[in-house]
Image (cartoon, rainbow, N blue to C red):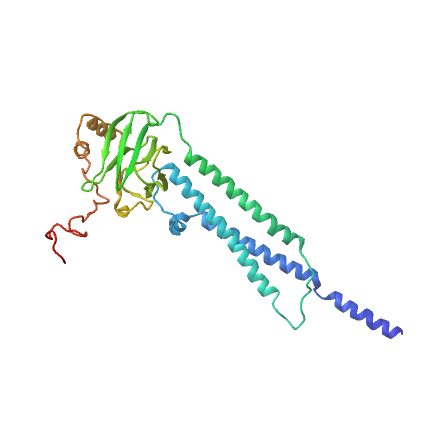
Length: 323
């Protein structure tokens, strides 16, 4: 009996001398710490460079020309970085579990074990992440869509099949007066002239169907509705001079794809001269020439209606003649 009990005690001593559960936990903690350090290093590398430029804006258009465009762009880049950080962490845990808990025999692992810290993590962490993203999205959205009582410039945007009219107004609302106007035709692209450094209010209305006012560099679209609805938005300033193509971004009919205009951003002094020339009765092309600008659109061109050659009754076919 004594010998048998001694053998038991010796085996127990040998078992307790092995690394055991504590050693495995320390190794697991070490791996998690290494994973966390790797994720932190990745974030440092990402934040230390122009992430948007490096990764092509993660699909978001670059080159915004308004403060609102920059805020939306920054929110998108930050959201993508957060998503990548979460993805790297989750992928790391998946690969770690694949290696750590790979099959070592025919016995199944314990099926009733749970890990409260891990369950707490994957329950609370997504709620916190979504809450933070929702907060910053609401802040940016409120800032982008806010309007002021006294913007520097008010432009009425009138859309119709399939062109644009831009009315420079002396106030806000449909009762304000138009002091100058630019009207597009099938032969001449309408050019909307605006200055840098001034706030601009856009009041949009349509003569027929739903259109959409879109300048890609402004990173902002707004539907143009018919009837009494006047969609309104503002930009606090335009930051870069140049010519930018504008488009209708809502399918509105046969020539929707050709319903373009051009935004011409000039200096405040040039803008004042342009508006004065328009008030004196000069055409848009004459007013543009007076301030040293190209009188015609340079980023897009008029569409060819082809109404005389590509329809069911071309001009070069005699009446009654069959094909």
